[in-house]
Image (tube, rainbow, N blue to C red; front, side, top):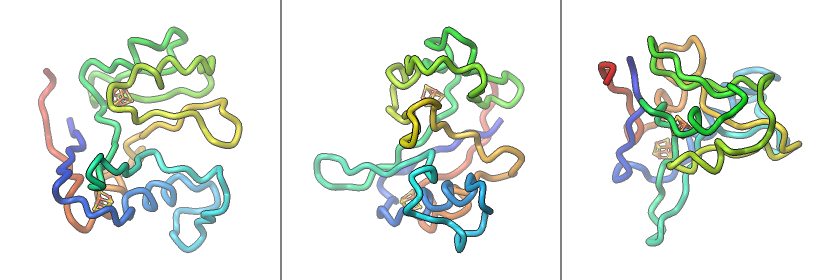
Amino acid sequence: MKRIMIDKDRCNGCLNCSLACMAEHNPAGKSIYVLNLTDIRNESRNFIALDRSGKPTPIFCRHCGEPECVIACMSGAMSRDPATGRVTYHPEQCAACFMCVLSCPFGVLKADTAERKVIIKCDFCGERETPRCVENCPNRAIYLIEVSEE
Ligand code: SF4
Ligand code: SF4
């Protein structure tokens, strides 16, 4: 199974990964040219934070082996597929209690900005072989590795 790894030292904060994520999940189309950045419903599932020294730091879902978000979710809206290792969010089962947001040790989950009813969560870009954020990082600050089930 594949995991996204982060090399913070390589990140220069260009935000290509966040734009790629927003474009990939845009209902209006996947081209970057139809991405409306003024529409608050277009949200990135990853983000770049600045650390105390001002260094850009990629914050990405790790699709953890023992995901705290899944453990904390009482309605079954977060699940982990043992075959693929992907941690998936099921909005139709979500009670909007935001326990997953509080539980994620990487601080990567958030409620949607527009209505605060669903969780914005990495889906590994669905059927894509390589998530679009990884494909669009010019510095290989985020990259895929193959891991075996632990
Ligand atoms: S949301 Fe957080 S806890 Fe859940 S799989 Fe991603 S990194 Fe792990
Ligand atoms: S695309 Fe790569 S270098 Fe650019 S902000 Fe994202 S992780 Fe950092």
